[in-house]
Image (cartoon, rainbow, N blue to C red):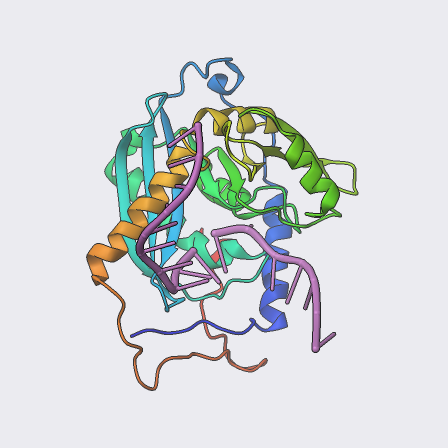
Length: 284
DNA sequence: GCGACAG
DNA sequence: ATCTTGTCGC
């Protein structure tokens, strides 16, 4: 039964989401809290996690949420959890967490109950951390709600606080030489919100790394770089690959649209909300 | 009408 | 995010 989460949530909902982000933002820790994060070779780091959500084509509701754990430094998958979910909220730039986060928290909770010894010591998250409109992207959100160190790894620059993917920015990218090269992303506020990272020698597009939770920007960049066999760090890449494969194995191919139920419009303002808000006060 | 827009 | 196969190059 394919549904289509289209349109924009009511302003009232966006207001609640913003308030939630502002409240939880105060709990973010933007420094190293673990000994291995300070070690030049990350000695003591044994497990790195990655999360991702892949979608069924032609259906913005049905998706597969995946959590993988890789050994470090071997980067071999030691745990995989793929789960079909029904997304409720639509994608709105700046509010990605309210669409995808509940299912990622669920996955961490399953791991905590079933294989606690495999709990990752850090999570790489597809998206931004403090490099965000409200300074609280999905990587911060997942970190605060799980207590795990998290790193935001975005594939495109979120243009916020004066940051622009303009000619000057593109020139800085062009000047990146070898894998591991970086340049800081400084907003108008003067704060360094993240780093552009050339993740390997022959990658044209950089990654945009920012602090999620319980890790410094320096360690976040260094760890992201050390997890890259290809452009996308292996934990996120494996989560992406495996969630897509799971969808293929589950659905076996594209399905025809369900007549009469192709679209689901948002309820007008003032009516009962059309989807769960997934605020932390409801989760915790 | 046009550009912007993490996933 | 997804729509999309093969193909050129290291």
